Image (cartoon, rainbow, N blue to C red; front, side, top):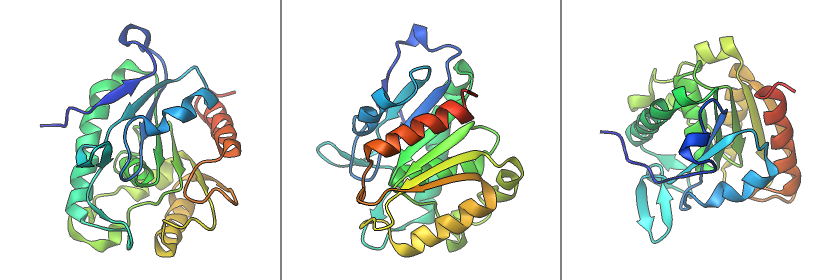
Length: 218
């Protein structure tokens, strides 16, 4: 049975039909309100749905799956199950909307890119901020799970914003993500010196432009 996610919507239910949807996926140890601060700087034509990750870590802190933060290490089965569970929720709402776009920060970017890689046809675009893509070469349930060949054929627009000196995301995760993105998506990559492991105003402006151009078509 799929998780009954806690969700904050930016539109009432009777106002959502036919609007493009952006699903907001927060980072490790955060919560569903964390990314709502980005919304005022993003296109208002969208409906935004911000989800709380299902695994509780403590008061106000949640994760999509267990993660060793120092090594960015995780269980392949836990990552697989988290992605499948989140897809069940997206599948339950996607037909109400004209398109679905994913925006993930940090670990939320790992979830967003994994969803894209398993279902390349399902998403109009993906935004990844200060995060990484899951390495499918680790074996286990991730072996053969991603359809990177199908994704490469579609070249879905992908925005990747980060600081070269991000203190959290390890260099091996960044290198893998860079290699993966160059081979599979239509990549827009922008570096933001001084952002650290965060999001800066200039970056929000660029995401606004990216969504306006790639999804709204203007």
